[in-house]
Length: 98
Image (cartoon, rainbow, N blue to C red; front, side, top):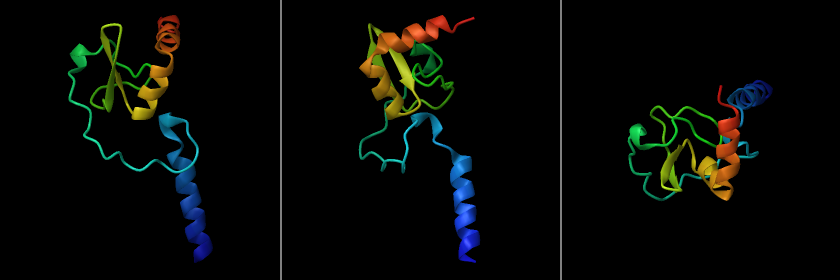
């Protein structure tokens, strides 16, 4: 019975995948801070997370202001990575537009 449980857990882990955080290991503990304030998607510079490309219909976890514009993110991880070099990710997005 233990072998079946381990196999099922391993399969579920593989199916879940790493998500957009691209980090290995267990998910971090939930933050003990307030959630990001609600921001209307009309006020965001983009309708996608500029780091991972996820569409931001109703899933804005955090917001970052850069050069007078507000960018929405699906996670703190994506916001933190974007904040390290915003121009890199904005350039990449503009190059990939049709």
